[in-house]
Image 1 (cartoon, one colour):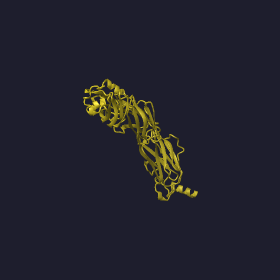
Image 2 (cartoon, rainbow, N blue to C red; image 1 turned 90 degrees about the vertical axis):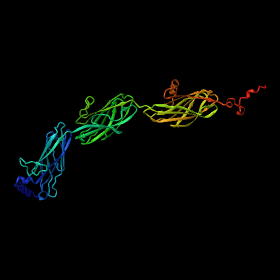
Image 3 (cartoon, helix red, strand yellow; image 1 turned 30 degrees about the vertical axis):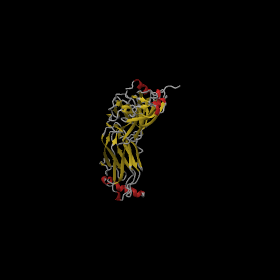
Length: 484
């Protein structure tokens, strides 16, 4: 535009009534509620009120934004906008726009003004106030402000400050069981030596954002609970030192609900009876994680979970009646088709790690083979048939409440005591590799549940004993005199 024409146009516009002049510009403010202790943004929209009026509105445009109490300026960003004269921490923001608002391009680029809200700001209603003007449409000394968006040259935006919070929302167990609230009593399985588990602790974040970094959660595990690993959302990096587990993440966005799933093992140091307590604390760069959560778990950003404990479940292998059975009724010397069957059950609460059935066989008895069994067994022997074998049969661990049996075939030699009955001693336990300890204990007291004492009668035909053909084994041979 020719300078003379521009000067004439500005002089003509200066003669227009103020209300008409200001009505040519539309000013809008937009902002979400501000949260204490974090950053926010207020957006400024400047445009021609009537795009198709044929008038180009020339720069510079002077904008002034007055921030509410507790909110201070940090930075600004927008094409052809500059707020360079505004210092960090100011409560009044002065900016200029150097672009032209044309009928064909009536909208200025959006200006984003980033601000900090002090942690101590009192939550409640707030108001932003902004004014704008240029040489064509100068701002009067006392403009009439109107709600955003406004065409009076002054606009106000009613908003609010809300309290930010970072807290534990409750506890849960992946295998079932939930305990709502930051201070709670565990409804899941008790801590038990030799077991593992997972506890989810739920985290709720409101207000704090990506500038509130890092977020740190600290857990003090009870005695006997050993940290193994963690799975989390958002991703926390966790490490353990003794019973203290520390987890950090870069930040949590406002409104994010996350969790940290602590995977743990339980060792023999867990106190029985309980309960025991798991304590937690969480914080960020504005509100630190408290160090007194053990003494006062109800304070903000603390949590406590009361957990029951119990004695470890154990397997209890024992024989059930009839503990031992044999067939046939009499074992015949010189035969190898005699059977002995043991019946047993795991009456304990835990699965056995192994099932070992051992036998002290009398002299003249020898292990031949396994006929059938539940579970499958592998058998080995020590000693000799002449002096008495020791037989050890080992199989898979018998599950809790399950029953089993072992049926073996025995050989009986002519050295076996006759007519007996001769005793067989048996023992059952979960030793692996097999041990003689239980068999030795049963020898002292065979009435114990893991023990069995069984007597078997033995006989032998005269042919077996004397080595004669059965045709002549009739008792008359001794009637013939010794002709020699």
